Length: 105
Image 1 (cartoon, rainbow, N blue to C red):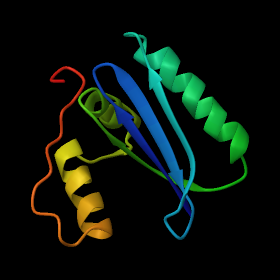
Image 2 (image 1 turned 45 degrees about the vertical axis):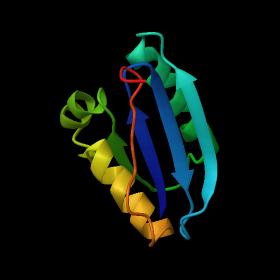
Image 3 (image 1 turned 180 degrees about the horizontal axis):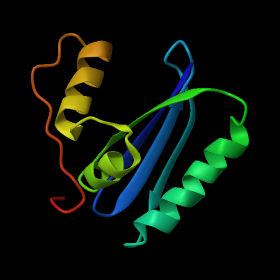
């Protein structure tokens, strides 16, 4: 099963689709210009067009993602935890990671 990650932040929406082996097969980075819903619909429609007949597991993260995840009953992972999981999976010797969101940068 493919996996779709959606990161909805204060200024951007990022999407990534992973294949069954965890390889990135599609990714997008878009500024939403405070139009989160319409920007997300465009990105999800693009992914739907590419992988229409395939089952995809979805996980949402980001400062603006919690409300959407609750409303749609999609899995939500807090972004610092998501970053930690990814770093531990790919780089076993990392001691420190600094994450700056759009509103902090």
